[in-house]
Image 1: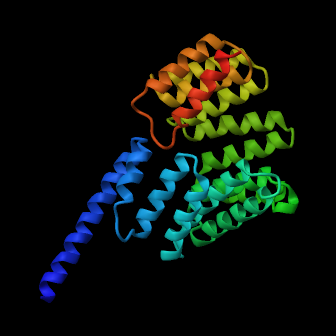
Image 2: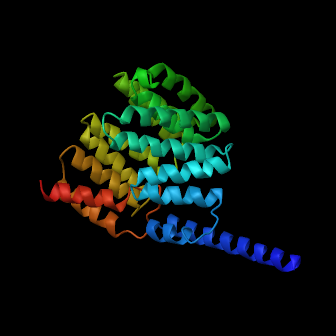
Image 3: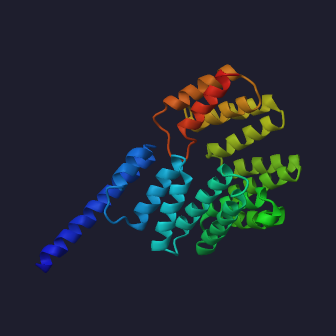
Length: 283
């Protein structure tokens, strides 16, 4: 009898692992609803399953349910830096989308969880980057500040030199040190010559500074590095729309983006591209 019970438990565990693996594959292919439906079949979700549920809710824009799922994952594994980071991200989005009355509380919770994630694992680069963004953007009464951002940028640089230069570029831009910001972006690109994202960062910044011809040349470089890359389509289209230039070209690029079969959770959601399409169609 005991052997039968043990066998059934092992079989259930194996099924749960296969279910989680399949749900993860669906998530990576941006089929968040199908991933979530599969995860909801689990009778006793693991911490990893709760985290993936939270990621699905997060990508679908339901940040309250995302928070709940991430908190359940963290309750099961309190020392997991990744889970703490996701709780912070979900509170951050809630702060961005909530009323002026609830936004400060959500923002403070986001900072607390980002700091917790970094404390749990100082090598968690994504948590450090989000904490840096918070320090850079948030007012002092919520725990933000340029001095804090600068100290964290130095820590980021110790782990990832290119990312450190990017952080320092953002800080310089906030301080209106525009030449320094550009220099830091170029150094980031030099440190990671195969990362198209670094090239896109510079292209977008040059456009922001009104240097459109130079921006176009850098966008061309990004396209030559990764032809037909969705992230290049989106970045270029978004920049055109932001500066009210080449709207027909932006529409073409966004259409390619929406039709792409190569999107990942790291790319902007199709819904954002569709929103931009509606925006320029009504322009």
